[in-house]
Image (tube, rainbow, N blue to C red; front, top):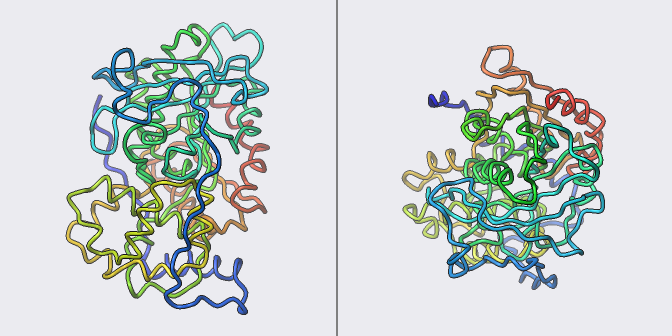
Length: 426
């Protein structure tokens, strides 16, 4: 397979990015009567009270990956599958399985990852159920909230696609419920784990003869960014495995997070950012620090900054989001991140979103009132991807806007994403 042309990435002046992120969030979430206290520290995160249900497949420790769970040298290989425990079932699924498979992690090494697979009720079509790969949004980077082992906030949405006659492969992403750290906002590593999950699902005993080779990726939030990386490389990668990738649905896809990180430092505007934005930044710093040990990220962090990054590695989204609500993120840095040699290029490679090079249809949607991925950011990124279809660098691109917030667009978009998926998976 020929190497894909190098992608172009979103580029926006850092000052504009900072304004686009901070202004709507501050205006929407905080009234003038609630000023930020300069130097406000992170509150202590609350301990997670939910015990994961591993359905008999607990592979959090490297010591577990031995014997019949030893990983093969080839990515995209199913290692073991188990039935999901009854409380973890999808009501509209005839099959609920959890499986371990091999993939490639952020360090370029073979690693284990887990995924769920759900099949619709009824008899499978002659060529098998068309497959939707679900790229989930932010849950955190600690093991406790591995999606296939916890209460799924996306359960109703996945049931919807099952009721439409699609099999659903729902990867957890490398590092969630498996050894190593979740490489948050690492688009390439996340995309690799998604594609490898789809490939591995085809070889499970429980799905034999029931899955079509046709598949698409559907996503939300951080998963939207991952889906765009999937869309950028999936046609060639999955074709090598005998699969037929058809297109992507990306809801509330983030962009410019690398620009926000690059303007982070002691002089970051003292704006009372919401807990979600601060948590995303904390997850990104922790993930990047792990992926690039050759860059001494800790040397640019204060004691408070290291405490924030360390705390981000353990709880789920809810705890850091609450702990970081209205925290002055400037107190996390002893010097600008961008001043560190080699960091800017590495950070862009780690998390920048490609805006061209899509050879299959792409469906983008965003909410007018989104403050998690502020709508000005969605407008800029979606517009560039859309325009590039007319320069020949992208296949068909649809962009849809809804009068919803970040989460509300997921359901609002189904009126348009359903016919899109029916068309591309036919």
